[in-house]
Image (cartoon, rainbow, N blue to C red; front, side, top):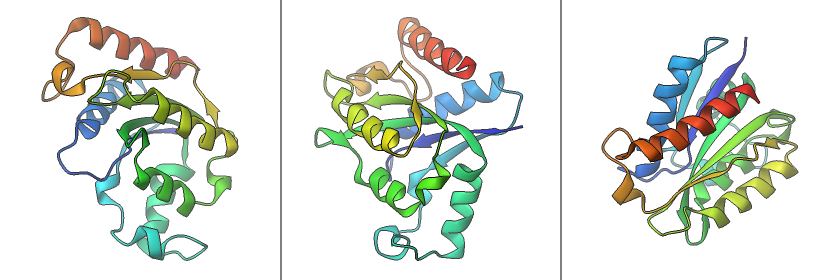
Length: 176
């Protein structure tokens, strides 16, 4: 039995990233029966993560985060918001604060979220390079969600077409 972790890759309040991550979590939870499906909300990370959790220091709270969301998960959906043409700094800080061995040989699927028209393609590529360096297997279908404010409702995509594309990505990754 293994877990799947959905990562909401920002600590920004009221983000579309979390709304998208929640949709992924709800859908995967309905489909996946071989373990638990977890939602890692980066708004809940320790506020001093950049100064207290890196370079080998650890608080008990952050050890629990690593254990719960990373150590016992074999697959990850990382919902990646666009920040300044790349991915959110909190994702990089998180990665830097976790020992690389916790990521080795695990699988990850990336979904970009952006207000602009490219759906954070560049940010997904940047994150993919970092994750591949950590020996993770990055799924080929990196899905950009462009103009997220226009295409996303409170809990799900506004169109059946957008929903269909997301569900196809999820189901393909579950078979991967």
